[in-house]
Length: 331
Image 1 (cartoon, helix red, strand yellow):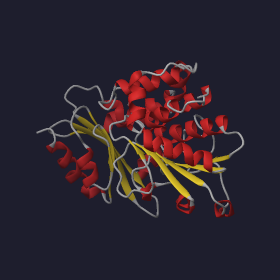
Image 2 (cartoon, rainbow, N blue to C red; image 1 turned 90 degrees about the vertical axis):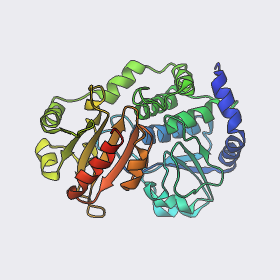
Image 3 (cartoon, rainbow, N blue to C red; image 1 turned 135 degrees about the vertical axis):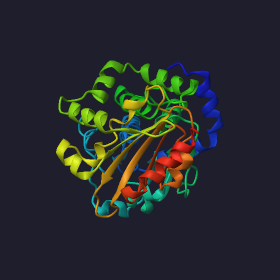
C-alpha cells in the first residue's frame, strides 16, 4: 500500500503512543474494544474496523467488542454487539476505548477491570483513563485516528471488511467530508481505505437508504420547525409525537441535516425527548456552518466538536434559554 506523506508525518507525531499500543496488543492474549453509549457511525465503525483488523492480523488472540446496539444500524450496518458474561473479565485483558471523551459515556463499565487501558479518540477528555492515549482533537473522526494508526503499522494488512467499517465511520463523523474538520489527512485516510477495494456506492446506499414511512417523519419536521432571529433552525420531537410517527428517541436526530444547506440558517438542532427512567431529558444534536458551537454544548451538559456537538436539557422549559445561547453566536 502506498502511504501518503501526510499519514507518515502524522504517524511520526504519534510515534511513542503508537508504539505503546502496538506493544500492548502484542502482549495481551485477550482484547476487548469499547465505545460510547447511544453509538453513532463513528463509534460503531471505529470499533468494528479495529476489531476486524485485530482478528485478521492476530488470529491466535481472543478479540471481543461490547456496548449497546443501535436501533437501526444493527444489524443493518454493523453486527449485533457481543454479550460477555461477567466472569470473562476476571482474567487479564487489554481494553481499547474508541470515540469517547467522557469516561461516564463508555457503554460497558467493565473496561475498568482491564489490566491495561488504551484509547484512540478525537474528543477533548474530561478525565483521562488511558496510560498513553492516542488523541487528535483536530481529526474529523475517531476513525481517522484509528486508520492512521493501522496504516502506519508495518507488517499488517487492512482487509476490505475493516476498511468498510472505518470508511462508514469517517464519512459519518465528517458529514460526508463537508465539516470544517475535514483536512488533507482526512482524505489521505479515505484514500488508504479505498485502496483496499471497498465500494463507496454500496456504503453510501447502506448508510442513507430510507423507507417510505421515514417520509412521514420528514414531513412532520418540515411542518413544525422553528427558526430563531439569527438563524438557528430547530425541531422538537416529544414522546407522544415519536409514538405517532413510530420512531424511537434514538432516531430523533436522523433528520437534523435537513437544514444544512438552507440560506439564512447558521445552525440547526434536533430536540428529542428521551423518556429513559434513569435520565429523563431532552437530547439535542447541534450542527453549524461556521461558528464553534461546542462551548454552548458544554454549557448545556454535552460536548463535541466545532460544527457537530450534542447537549441536553432536563425540561422543555429550558429550551428558549438554550436556543438564545446559540442565537447569540450569530448576532
